[in-house]
Length: 393
Image (cartoon, rainbow, N blue to C red):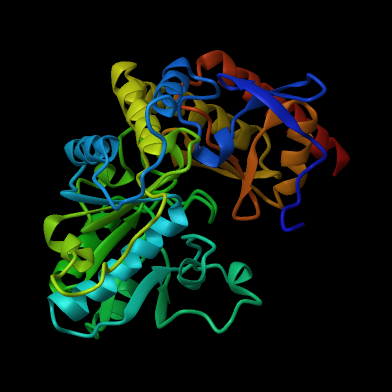
């Protein structure tokens, strides 16, 4: 189906932060498969873990316990607030699980039929029916109605608006990204996440953090919520978790996890045939292990500071063209005064792969292994493109 709009490039192989197309041309990859390839391409530890598991056991389904799934759940519980984890195959599936958990938690566990989901303007939570319904960007919902509801949207980084939305006490959950990524790399004010925690505690609402893009070291810490010193009731993960192998996770406290707990005599409340399969879990365990062993959290924070400073210099150098440099860790963006697609295309023509976020933002989300030389090269290419665009105005 022709639902994508790729440029005429066919990628053939990758190594580290470099990609090569079928014609042999090299590209500096500062997108990492949309914040997915945390260890870069063809990382030996990840490749070996996948190969070894493929020789051992690939799939059984969740009719049985799976060793690698148990070990991965233990790993995630160790590095996060979570007590329980449900595994699936993508970020959208993880958010679907979180929504079902929240609805059922209030109806079955708490005995109160709360149906409303509170989400934020500019958010992105997936492309399935439920997740596109709670995505705060109308362009993604257009043509797919009627959508799942009720959903109540509030401005991002606005605690007063969140308080008003939660005041009726009819919301089962409030879902928010610690940094709005697809919406344009918007970092909320300090204290915003903590404020949401207080509001949700006060109103008995489950707080869900969508960490699909911010999680697994992207911001220089394991999870984006850590920067505010608070924890949610539920967290969703995907993208970097498998390093390129599809896997998603819905992690929760023991109390919140009761929303998806099996009850004797009833049906299984939620399931996934492929979720948490041995191959994907082995890959995810290798990603987590390598991030820890190689000190990639500290590296991502330091490399992100370098990238952020370089983008800020470009904003100062091109005041009529660039508006703002924003982000945290290795999730960064430079906002332009006009659409970013042309700049992204010109960068690609020069061998630099970046992406568009929020229409006017050039997004950088490289592998956590990116080094200073790669960042300097990327910034030099972007500067040359900005020179070119400025000259053409």
